[in-house]
Length: 254
Picture: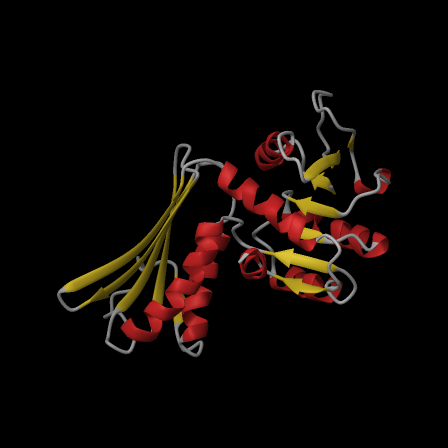
């Protein structure tokens, strides 16, 4: 049985993961950490990680970027593997994640959906064929009106997967309103929509002469992210220090 600490347990994703784990026979939630708690959870909840000394096999983080440093210190101190799901991290914070992975196992993913992580691989194959054939590349992402960062971490991950396949020769453009010029060839446009309760929509458009190929992913509930996070926690428990990804989880399940 994999014992999990949920960092950000009373957020929407924390509650989703808690509900999923209540019905899971291979993993359980042994503690949660959240500044705000009304006592409705069936597991102990602490206001800070420093207060939480419950024995666990993995920590799942769906909190905020501001809480990253403290969470990394906690995991390194306890040798506790971490599934890092928080997005919107700065370059400096990403460096701290890499440093922490030298001491403890960390699985970082901009999106915990198995479908999105498969799409990351499919886009590499598509880009290798379509970009040399002159296809322009655009990414459109849509999320609910409460999401703070834009573009989404997933949209950037999709762009990075394509760009990595193309030798990182493409630049990213987030706003064309101030530009009056022809679209450069080696450019990936990324557009964001915020509205309503959209869970997460991503379209990757390859637009060529007289034809368009679009890869689309739609998340209809937060459960898809919760299931992926739980699958990742089960995979990461007991792993040696290092950086891992959802690709490792998918390959490990094959």
